[in-house]
Image 1 (cartoon, helix red, strand yellow):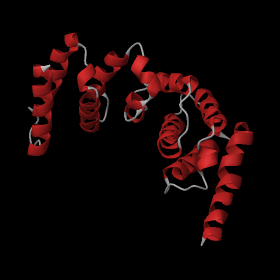
Image 2: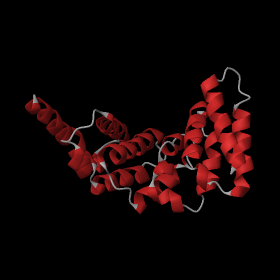
Image 3: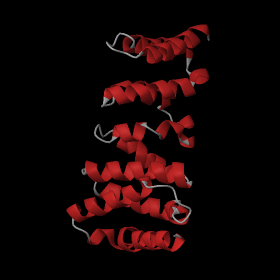
Length: 203
């Protein structure tokens, strides 16, 4: 069985990863979209010890950044790169370098890609000292699709409840109060939002 999996991973290396690392510039844009999508699927696939050395490699991540910077107008490519970096970091321990973080920050300016960045950027070490940290957090509710960003915003606020600047608490409370006016909101969700509001008013 292990040999079967090893053969699968060797095919991934030979057919997807090595071509990306060695000669991505030789691909037409449509071909690159396909191979980047295949790479994204590898990163999302069941976690495996056989992939760890490759998918935690910062040099490979730097190649992804080069591709992203070269195809900065191709949202399909950028979304796959951002999602791949998330999975490489979260599932395989890829170190988020300052260069990777700067790349992700640049993608927050792209309304088609920003949602995929918002899912995980607030958990990265560099975000804690990011100059526009709270400005970005407060922008999350406006990121499309808003129904999903609402959930992201709740978790970000809940995780940072003790660090919210005093002068921003009223703004955060207002966001949750507006959420609670939405029709057909589940009672469990209402309870979550109410609890956050109460915590902020008590602090």
